[in-house]
Image (cartoon, rainbow, N blue to C red; front, side, top):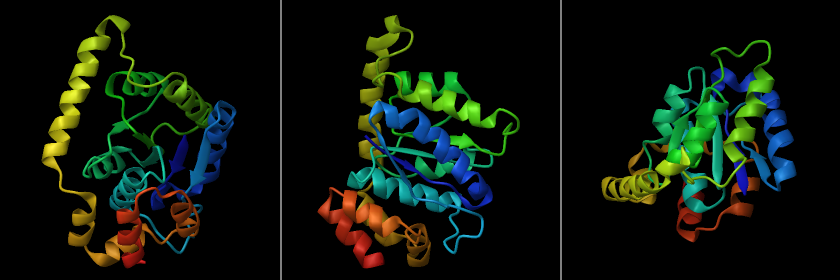
Length: 211
């Protein structure tokens, strides 16, 4: 699994701490981390939480990433932005229990963490525990286990509703402000990672036009 890390401008200074915790947990599981930045508050490419949603949608829908770890000060803005796009189911995760229940009940592909809320002493440990519970089992198995069947049925219903509710991502991108989209794709390593990992020629072409 390729796991993309995306940080927005107000929390960019925590990038190294988040990346370290994420890699420590998931690399022994056989997963790969792609750090799309922001890498520091001084980066030339300044990502807003709205642009996090754009970038996450492009990565997930193109197959360049299988999962997105992101957030903002409260986590709310990043979650809302991600869920504004097709192909992204993003949960708001503050602790390991949130992570486990979101993975098992909601079977999403992105989480938004409140990086400014309660991120003091032990913040790095909380991140490690979140990532451990997020990826410790295959997702979508249900919790508690006796609720697995109705929960899986509801997830399929949700997937159908979302499919009916959203336009194709390429159409959405073309309707957005060009500078907004370009800014989301302007990270230092975006081109290197995206074009190496992208599995969708249609989105590859769409991204190329913006770049």
